[in-house]
Image 1: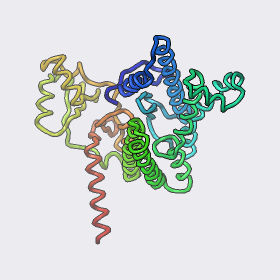
Image 2 (image 1 turned 180 degrees about the vertical axis):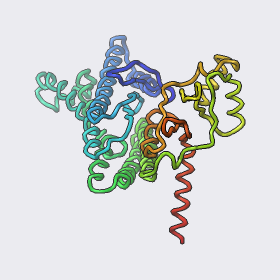
Image 3 (image 1 turned 120 degrees about the vertical axis):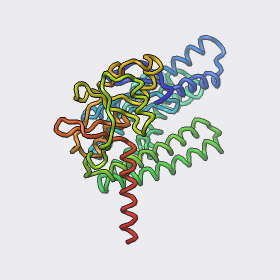
Image 4 (image 1 turned 90 degrees about the vertical axis):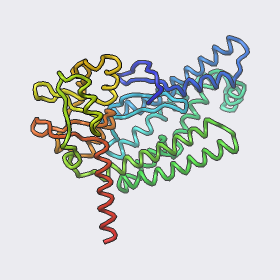
Length: 363
């Protein structure tokens, strides 16, 4: 995600903070209007603990996903919550159900731990709520986790509750259909959020959440539909066979000439005739600025891009491209480079399939 700052990693998961979280922090300070440095410090400590609660919520998703062999690449903290970016979707509805509820379960644990000393002090939940209304520190932390629990379980896909809804429906119907129904429900909730936030509460944050839910639901629905359309097809059905490659000894100026001469934007790089890695358009342009046009391609080649087999299922290859943020992957057959799989070619294949289906429907 653009405009994100990397903080480090936890359990091998990259942690990033989006600029919108920093804007949220500034907004909270401005609205609270702390009068003394002690009040400001307390507010910042509360924000830090809420940040930690959201982080633990997302780690709950990530650790449950790890139990099913699903890697979490990163957790991004934004102004409207955390996002755990999984390598792939769970294979079974029961797995998605457990992954979805793992996050809110963490908030229950945190709220319970905080509530134990609070109940000893206040002796009733009503007293805790009264102390929260007056801005008490730990009471605010308790309520933040309670709100996170209930809000995330709203069945507004792709929030946790929406994923629970899809998982339950997917136990009795095809995954793509369950996704379609879940996204319709989610976008309905998004419209309600937008109306309430804009017309009743005048809350910019709720409107932003509504927009996020609506757009993300639409994108995930499109992704699932795409995967469903590609099921059963091999990579060879969509790969580009007329492609250009580079040698490590070639200069960047030569790569630029190839880039400008056609539509290909990602180039396989060979060394002694064997596939070595990939050079993307962005890496090429960055290299032109930092290394100069006479620098060899071998200085910029990405070695972490593994080729895929031509017989690999196309939907699995698309999932790998999404997880690795690659717009193209090299395709091999019996160890020999035979093609490129690009997002553009997958889109064209889907358009061809759609045209064929419409023709068959009108024939």
